Structures are given as C-alpha cells and as structure tokens.
Amino acid sequence: MKTTSTISLIVMLLVFQLSFAQQSFNKDNSFEKNKSIFIEAGVNVSLPVHIQMFRTHRYAIGVNFRAFKKITPKTEIGLKLDYDYRFARNIPDTIDTVKERASHRNFSLIALKPNVQFNFNCNWFFGAETGVGYALSDENGAIGLGFVSEYGGNTKFGSCSGLYIGKYLSIGHNNNNFQASMNLTNFLHKGHAENSLGLRFNYCFN
Image 1 (cartoon, one colour):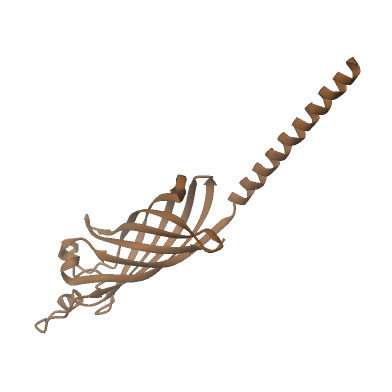
Image 2: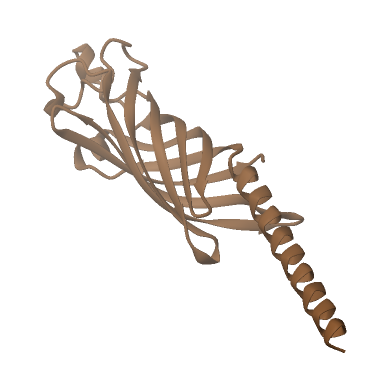
C-alpha cells in the first residue's frame, strides 16, 4: 500500500513537471516570436495647427512606414519614415519675391524618426518619436520652409518629433492587423516649431 502511494506521488510529480516544462516551452517560443522584425505601413492626413502655417497652408496627405521590434510584450522600438505633401491656400496676384511665392506653394516634408511604442489593454497604444526632417518647396528646392519668418532663411533641415495615441482594430479575419491613431507632430528649427495634427491608418504585414 505504501509502495502504491509512493508510485502515485512520483507519477503526479512527473505530470506536474512535464506540464510546467510545456508552459515554459510555449513561453520561450512566444518570446522568440517577439524577437521578429515587424513591418507596418499606411496613409496619413493632417492639418497645420500653428497660426503662421495655418495662414498659408491647409491639409496634407502622405504615407508612412515603420519597422519595429518587440522588446517586451508591451513595448516596441522601431524606426519610422513619414512623407507628407502639404497643399497651399490660394496664391495672391501681388507676390514678387521667391520667398513670398514659396509661402503660397505646396511643399513636401520627409521625416526619419526612431520610435518607441507602449501597448495597453483593450488594444490601445501610445507612442513617441523624434528624428530629422527634410522640407522641399515646390517653388524653390533651396528654400524648404524658409518662408516661415521665425526661421530667418532657407530651412530645408530641422528636427521632427511626434506623439500619438491609437487603437488596434480587427476587421474581418484579420485580428489587430489594422490600426488608427491621432498624431501631433512638429518641425523644429532655431527654437521655432510648426505643428500639425492628423490621423493615420496603418496595416501590419506580420
């Protein structure tokens, strides 16, 4: 009787150990999966919210691309590439200088920004990013955003930063592959920032 009890205890310990080993194996596999490089891309629309840019320009449309890696189940680090094309308001007839004309011309803004994102419950997320931006005016490529008086000259390069909050969405059979977010971004040069507020709609390919 005592031998039977001992054997039963040993069998129970073996089953517990195998079950624990299987759970550890699954966790290890999940961790290995989190080491993958993920890719997402999408479209963005925005409006200028700083008074000077708002006087001369209106909405922008563009695309974005992000490659990122999960360093914990809730934290991601990545690199984001943004492209925005901003449209100018109507061009007055009485404009003489190149700089004045540039203030009423469309321009492009390209930004490359290292990024960190925190994922919360209920599929919400929050992120921050900062990097470098390059502006290109349709009027004259050498001006960039130099038509902004606070920049005081040709301004093609500046620092670009942003904050965003959004949510992962499940559409059809795709679980959490889509996301929508609201973004506050800026272009900073010589202590002056031109800000914009926009929406992004992205798809994660992994």
